[in-house]
Amino acid sequence: MEPRDMPAVLRLCAAQNRRDGTSYPVPLIFDLDKSSPRYGQYLPNVALALVTTVDGRVKQGHVFMRTVEAMSFGGGRDDMEFSCAHIPLALELLRCAGYDEVHTFVPHGKVEELQKVLKPQGLKRIDQRLAHFFKVL
Image 1 (cartoon, rainbow, N blue to C red):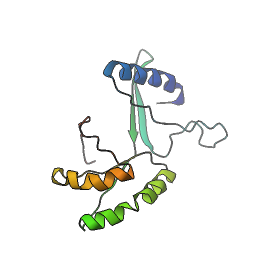
Image 2 (cartoon, one colour):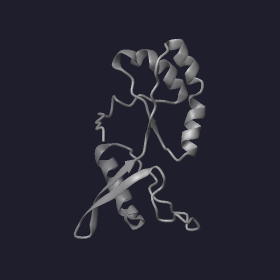
Image 3 (cartoon, rainbow, N blue to C red):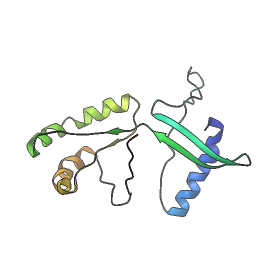
Image 4 (cartoon, helix red, strand yellow):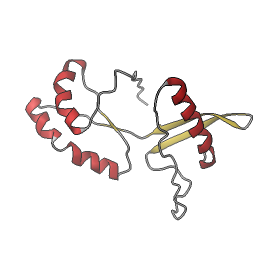
């Protein structure tokens, strides 16, 4: 993918959102600040961006983002409630480092308990509308 592909990718995303009733945004992919020495290059959180073309026309865009998975070890509910008070600071540090999102995966048996402390920190459960597919590289 190159910056010149972005208008086509944006049109394709808009058409997909209309077709599927979704509202997925196209993330920022390239540094478009013309005064930047990195102008036209991937932003730090973009690992890879590709387009599929047919006869020179962009037919589909693919963006592979670097994301953060939050993992917690040990402790119980009281420890988690204490730790959650620090989530905003951790999220701000990650945002400043160039990340756009964070994921945390909760065992099904702990969802009810943990969502009570995660929701107030702005973490939203999304697995009701998305299927999560995963592969260790």
